Length: 127
Image (tube, rainbow, N blue to C red; front, side, top):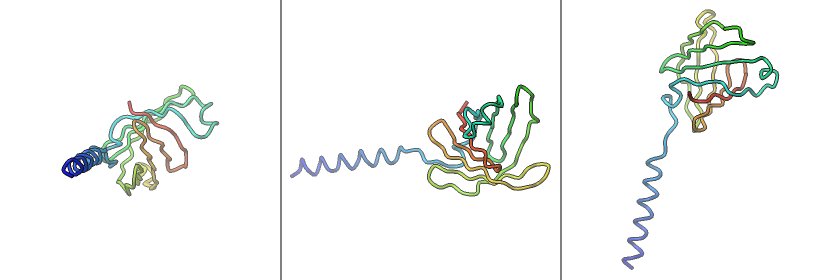
């Protein structure tokens, strides 16, 4: 009987250890520099788009080029609207127009599937 109890306690301790070590997704999970590596819309793929997104704790810094032509660097402030499972929704405010829009970020390891306010879906990879 003692061996069964000991074995049960050992199994529970191992399971609790795994649960305790699992990384939770939160706002800090996206902080850092990310590069767009794929677009869901095939027409976007033919435009030679190079985009990087740097997420800080309160803004998104976007830089890039289309067909080799540099785009204006954009710094967009945001607030975290919600965190559910591996999905973070950011409410961003465009710095010139003050228009609000949502960025939906679904985290999968070192990648994010991001949907921007224009419903453009892209895959970002941690740099």
